[in-house]
Length: 226
Image (cartoon, rainbow, N blue to C red):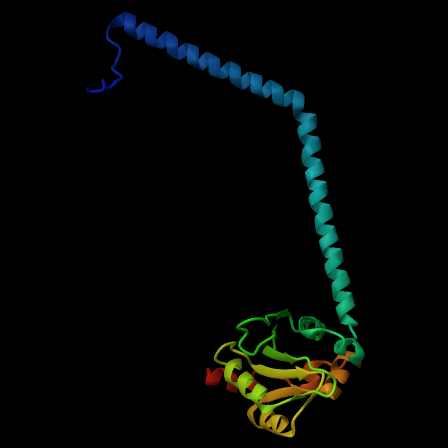
C-alpha cells in the first residue's frame, strides 16, 4: 500500500489567503505572549539567578585560592626538603623513586616518576630549561648492597634512544662496584652512591652542582646516539 505524501500548497483564493493570515497572526501573538511570560518569570526570579551566580563564582574563587595556597606550601616544603639516609633506607622502591623526584624538583628540575613495567631503565625524569633532560635510574638496596656495571650498560643504552636524555644518572642508597663507576665515568653515565646521596638529600647540595651538570650540550652524546 502506497503511503500518501502530504504536501504544502499555496493558498488559493481570497478565503484561503485570509485564513492563512489569521493562522499566522495567531502564531505570532502566541509567540509574543510566551516571550512575555518568560521575561516576566526571569524578572521575578532575577534575585535568585544573581545569588546562584555569585555563589558559583565564590566557590570557584575559593577553589583557586586553595589550589594556589597548596602549591605555595608544596613549593616551600620542597625548597627546604631534606631527607636523611635512615629515612631513605626505610623506604620501599616506589617511595625511593618519589623521594628522588622531590629532590629534583627542589633543585629546579620539574620532574615526574615514570618507573614501572617497561620503564626502559628510567624511574624518574626531569626537564630543565637550561640543563635539558635528566633520566634517573633508582636502585634501592639493603645497606651494603652494590650496583654493578650491567645497570650502567642498560641506562646508557636507553637514555638517548628511548628517552632523548641529556643526562643519565644512576642513584643508589648502597654503593657501586669499581668497574661500574669506572665504566660510567668513561661513558657519561653519572652515578650517585651513598655518600653522594647523603650530600644531595641530607645536606641539600643540588644534583647539577654535585655532578657538574652545567649545560645541555655537555651530555648531547646521548641525543646524537639516538
